Each structure stands twice: as C-alpha cells, then as structure tokens.
Amino acid sequence: MKRLLLSLLILCAVRITTAAHVLDQYLQVAQIALRPEGVRIELRLIPGVQVSERICALIDADGDGQITTAEEQTYARRVLQDIALTLNGLDTPLTLSKTQFPAKQEMREGLGTIRLTFVAASTFDAAGYQQLHFRNSHQPELGAYLVNALVPETSEIKISEQARDPLQREVRLSFQITPVNTGWQPGWKSMLMVCLCLLLFFSHRLASNKAWQFRPNRGKSAESEATVHSS
Image 1 (spheres, rainbow, N blue to C red):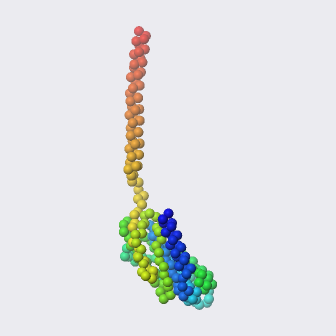
Image 2: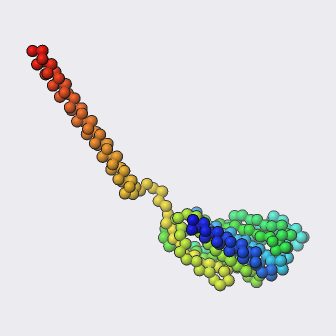
C-alpha cells in the first residue's frame, strides 16, 4: 500500500510539473526502474511552445517539413548518446527499447510528449549494497530536468538513498539487493511438520507391529480354551 501511494505521489508531481513547464524550455523527465533483470529508464521529452520549432528542426534532419520514422529513430539514438549510466562504478551501456513520438502539430502547440525507453542488462552483484549513477546531458541550453527512481516492484530491491544535483540532470541511487532463494530451505515450521509426520508414521508402525504380535497369542489362547472345554 505504501509503495502504491508513493508511486501515485510521484506521478502526480510529474504531471503537475509537466503541465506547468516553462514555454521556452525543453522539459525532460527521467524515471528509473530497478529490476532484478536490469535497469529501465523512461525519458519523456516535452518541448515548450517557444522552443518546439527548434526541436522539430532537430528531428526533421532533411528539413522537408515531414518527420519520418527513420528520423525519429535517428533522434532517439542522438538522445541515447547524451545520457550515461554507471552501475557500481562501471559504465553500463543502454539500449534503445521503445520510441513514441507525437504529431508535429502537437509539439508546436506544446502538448506533444516524446517517450523514449532505454534498458540495461543487469550488472548487479549477486547481493548486497549497490550504487547507480544516471546523467542526462541532452540539450542543456534548453533543458529543464526532473529525475526520479520508481519504487521497485519486488522486495528483492530496496532503495536506501537518492541524491540529485540541483538541476536534477543526474541522480545517484544507493540500494540493496537481496535475492529470493528459489531452493527449498525449510524453516522451523516446516521442520516441525516433518517431525510430526515422522512421529505419526512410526507410531502407526509400532501400533501395527504390536497388533500383529498380539493376534497369534489370542489364537493360541482360544485353541487352548477350546481343548479344555472339549475335555
């Protein structure tokens, strides 16, 4: 429940900031998701009305007034060159995973959002204390930045600290990895159940043996009793 509330608060804060961003700035919102399989970064780029034509010109490389899919991909790769990720002090390559571009008219009106998703395969240590550093250097002369780490979806990862620079172009995360053990390691409750099952099994076995030993004696007694009566 706490994770859900925190996620909603972050989402609301981002939406409020997005709606109120300055018209002559290029708002860039980075959201970082930590997962056991790696890192996922979603970057939302929102040009203000006064800079939208400049951003459209950057995307429309040939200047023909039309933005093609190839030009969108080229721009996305350019953004990829302007961001950097390190894990535990090691440079970690990011891969462009998904792109979504608005219509050119939406960007001109300051309503369009470019969504880019980047992923990095996990280079986390098996367990223990970890550090991540992310930096966004795309269009610093126009950019207004926000960066946040999402609450991890798994209990294996716990974020202990987030440190951002004043411009929020970069963030340093400290977090802990506690892998879930997939092997069967019984706790005291499981051990107790096993002991009870064994106790019941041997008790039943012992009772069966006693009953088996007692039956022949009863047979002999009955036979002797019959002989006495017949005599």
